[in-house]
Image 1 (cartoon, helix red, strand yellow):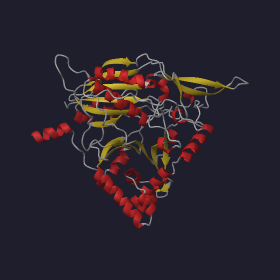
Image 2: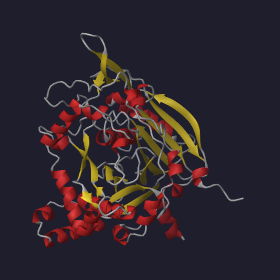
Image 3: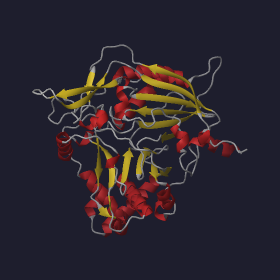
Image 4: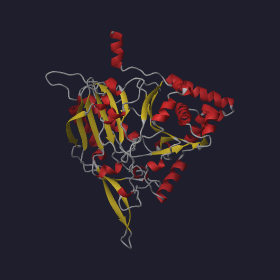
Length: 482
């Protein structure tokens, strides 16, 4: 009888505990969700995770990663206390008739706590989690996260943050499930990095980190105190939409700094040849990579020549507002920007440089005035993001290679790899991560339908830019030893 595949091996839960912050006075006990936050209430939780080598064991008291992380997490929540809260809904009524005209959501910062799960994946090795030059093992990875399928509005009844520490045969996977209506990825990774620094300090491996100063005061367009976003319903559940998970394949693709520089240079030369000196001067590696993915995914989909397609990307508003929001702003401050629609035939015929410049124009147009106009439009007609906003002909770039994922050393070494769960994925979604070796390299987590992924695997332009998979450090050692 053949041995079971890694994806079929079940993860066994050892324990579940609630971790709460110490009972200290708090700056804010009730934080309103505003425009950018409330629009996320129908989306899934963020699911990101880090793979580590197994912590060194010691005698007579073996190191317990779950206990270690729980202790440091309690101290981190002292400063990031909204994460340990829950959502509460407030109804808004007409002053004359008393009829309900809308509702708003707030964070109740009463220290209800977050969840930490300790689990064991019997017989699963690190190499099963990050197989080289192969699809990501979606079924296996899904077992490393809590709250799969949960929507952010569920934060009224369930934790806003849940961690699963899964022991592997030769490593540990730490999976985070984090409520996206509470904050964006910038604030989330600031929190995780502070938590990791506390973990290192508790083992005497580094000095105690300085206390962070996250800003919980929500932004408002007029600069005054932010009021809650009022949604046009008696309860947010009326706006929540759920869809069955799509059939997808997923690849984690590596782009070295050299490969990205070559992509950028090719786009620059094409633009100069076309007389677009301004577009050539403004080029970035992000534009070059986004345009490669946009064009090659469009070709793989075999769209009709006249079918319009766009490239969209999540973008941080903090530095684009005037005055700027501080880096420490703890909330959502992101928008999805998009290129002007292009016919599929035009996108493919006009080349890599033209597509990169189109992405660059979309980024440049995202100014303070554009952000404020979108906030005003949302306020006039509030909504939450659902699958109805998904464009099956377009591409979407999420996450960011600027997030310090590989700085998250909890005390037993830096991560070997970053991976994600099933949340918020659809055909054409790409999440960008920093490359493990640094230096400006990028990992792209690409999800496509099985048919479109099979077509992309035959695309010579695309694979010429992809850097071959690097082995896990442990595998390199084994190779040299043999």
